[in-house]
Image (cartoon, rainbow, N blue to C red):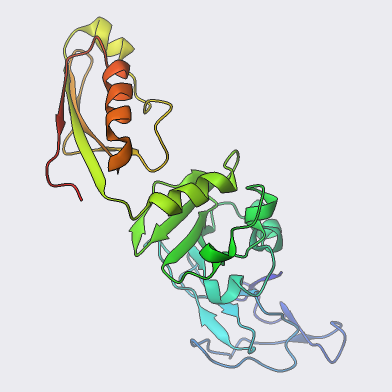
Length: 266
């Protein structure tokens, strides 16, 4: 793929196909608009990125398979690049195709939307997804290259994500299988005053939580050198609730915590 900075260099960035790349096409007077056709002689390919942006990716476009412009749909809210499914499905392995860009500009791309048949599943997670999952239309697969995280969204609900390194396809498949199960949740409210206990208070989530169970901050957190308080919310498939409760109870043993089940989780 190629990235063209047309804001900085509009006169010589784009080459002419008819000249085998020996001559440039001056696009200084070209005004980019979403879905606008680009010149037939422009030496660009589907998936290439054309940027007229003076700040991040605020005015950046992809070349579509129909040789038209596809404006960046910023999903980050901060003018970063989102590579949409309509572009990524053109390639067998998106991370391979855009690898040079991600390496050269690690803070440019916020989200990459993936097809369920993308090469990431076999290349990074060990095996492709089964056909039953590939045929579903209620699942969205996303990569955040800035965080090196892979996300699964089912019916518009976000997961906590999976690290790209170390995750197995079986874990993703298992998560999808339980995502629609009835949920249970409980709150861990903590109030730690002793300096010795504050120094030992664990910031990380307990290890060994079953797939589908998450820990998130709930409400306000207060912290200082001699006092911390707040609440963690643990939530996941109801079938594993007793197992998780025991893990959490043991994990916070010796600290001043209150563990209470939520009654309205579904």
